[in-house]
Length: 302
Picture 1: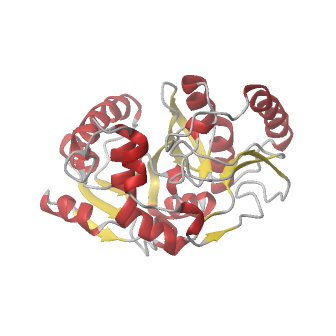
Picture 2: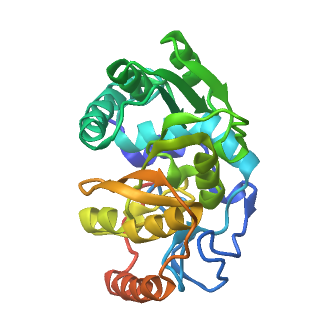
């Protein structure tokens, strides 16, 4: 069987040769002071990950431009994940994992939702498996927003309303949904603050929003490597603390939290300033941890 290195090389994706853009200001606190933590990701690409000194938000800089990310997700992303995982991952095979995810989410929401939603919007909803499962359980109408025509076609065939596009560009107009889902998506967007603002405008009064985060510290603890936590398809690296700070700024309050994987059920409220001093103290602690841990890891392409 061919190894991961040769499979990744065969994709012929030269990250450094693509159009990249710098990220000067932190998307959470606006600070321009950040520290370089690693200049390589888990695939072996020269992706530079930094952390904001003021609040602890991690992010890629430079990163692919928006147009480059569009090409990446259309042509490279699924083959790259397939090469890294050693198995085929596409719109068809994704559905098995999404069904398992939907079952766990449904159990959590059934315990924590104060009322059964009549409408569900799944932002970045892929093939619509999660939305379909929740709509069936709650007897709700479902809508999926996603940039992939291939995956939206699968969602439409399941009877869901589909909307093509990226969350940052989405304008709900007068429409509102009782339950808005942002499943395994927030780490992939180019503007976390703008994305959460869209979710805030999309949720009905008294509705709920579900967001989960690929917590940076959890991944580092599990893998023992910062490099293994970094990959070009994640422009941002949140923790429970930075996620909660983003929610406060966007006008959300946390109604319930799933601890095993950093997931949050949010209630619309008023925007509030985060505890910047507390975030700064945590950032200093984490930076010290990363300096001790180091960022070395074998290059999978060699």
